[in-house]
Image (cartoon, rainbow, N blue to C red; front, side, top):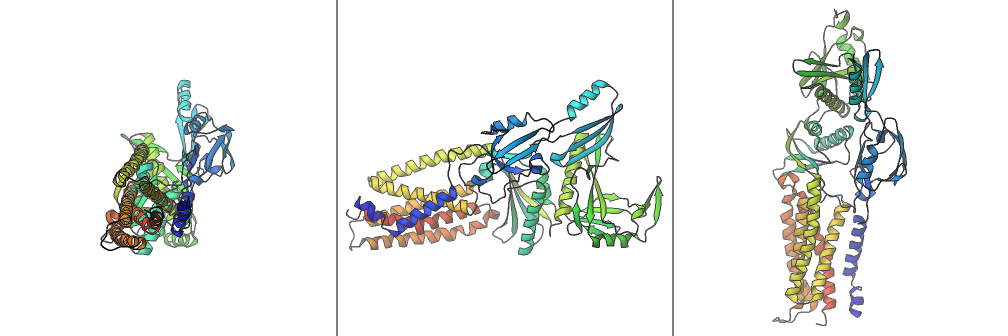
Length: 568
């Protein structure tokens, strides 16, 4: 008992206790936490219209909004949530309760149908996907009418991306949680300002496109070349990777003169079903084995762009085609220097500074459904680029990794099991070496403290624990065990040529430890950029672990060792 009191009189021991306590507070472990949390909200969905907001990239996992019940029925598992979604019918209103607020949601129709005589005027509205379709389908037989209704009428999903409730604030990288990692490289050299602008533009594009809780960060290799690393949790989306690689340089020209560009020249882009979707006057058509569908949406130009349009059209001639009057020159649309469409300009716009413009384009496919989906994807991509503007340079996709969340969860379970075995094995080896339960107990206790500190710091700085970070953690812990053995050997050495006091012995041990720490620190610095930053997690975790060990855990261990074995 006197020795324990003396241990707690040591300032270095209290530093360790306080730091570990703060790190535990940052990790916020709760093994009993269960339920369903909201990981994202898709735009124009029932959830979005009800006011539910998705978490940001900086939201700690334990503070994400948690679903408590739906219509007073508890939601404890993902199965409970999906069981309710399967029972939804069009226009059904329900109450969703979370740990933050009570929301009233209405199940939106995936498709709406209006019947006119023997012809169906199909009004297909997909508010969940921001899509609309108007066309006329001739149906003459009653059986076919019922078949069409059965295939088309449906309910849009609620629009919530959900996941199992976490048990701590530790963030796991894509290697363990699943998702897509895209490595982008600028086509030409860029400045630091341009790099920051590109990162902000990419974040805006992904947010406009309906994705949240994403990671976009710069990276460099050992040669100094800049890269951009984008991590997208959840399922892979091909259209998002394509969106990332586009420079998004949009221009509308009359011959060689630019009328307006994407970004600052555009003050509003319509994305709602009433002014965007498939063109009702054109719809879809088939040519041979290929289908094509036209989309259209309206935009609002700035006054400066409208005046440029007026100046470029005032001297154009008026021609008549199919009883319609047009200007002699067309408005040609270019995306990344490639022509995507050519629009006729109505005669009424000659010399007029009109700010309201309608943009159109197309999508093709082997089937009508594929053409419709491609048309909507092209429309959404073009809308996003018009809103966010172009990137300073074109980006090339250097590497794309797709990780299954199922594999990540299994790997995480294996890591936990192997970690316990490693701790037991190391403790057994140390006990076999010293034949002293006190020594092995102290070493293993401080090892656990170091792991807590590493995970706590990672939680505070919002660093994701991935495979490379786990490798760094193992290196840091292994180095810590080795250095504690050095301290133990020095302080317990009895036969020396010159008698040394305890403090002198510990100083000798820390001289060697500090040399080892500086070697590790310097060795990790190049790895911050090696592999285009993909080894950054390994380097940062190793540096955090080594620093926490040398400046916090090792001094506390030496102080405790001195007290416990001073009499021996």
